[in-house]
Image: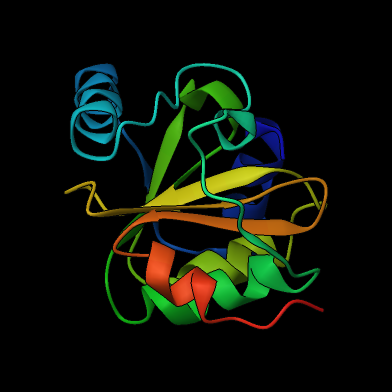
Length: 139
């Protein structure tokens, strides 16, 4: 999903969202690399040999909001050039529901987990989210 689509969805839905400033964006990228070993600033982090296999789930993009629940999360696309903060999984789903289907990443600002829904309909999880993804049935 392009950042323009996210910004447009935020405007159209009136969902509360915040674009992280550059220093916060870079700090989160560093935390994800240090804590989870994932370089989200590079292309297709989900396609690395070290990435988990994930699960084939065409509905994976919707399931992510259930994992996030009532907690704050951030959304970004490939290379994490811009990162959006959302209040909770419900706000996140409202945005995803108003964007075209594309590849994106979700995590918390502590970098305890990272989730990706890619263009092959795979849901991939790192950190605390890996066991949640692993327990999902493939469709």
